[in-house]
Length: 67
Image 1: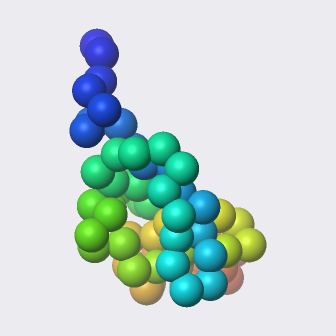
Image 2: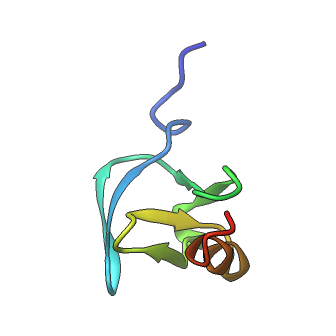
């Protein structure tokens, strides 16, 4: 099945105060839950790991090595 550009996840470069879009898309995938996160709802990420998280709980779980 072919995916349209809007169905593909975006590729982002995460920085301390924001992110830069490298490849356009409407969402990113949570590194813990694999949930699609719309870019406008993205609030949690790790600069060192270059990963996005769907919630603060999932970010904490990942950073503590539980996810």
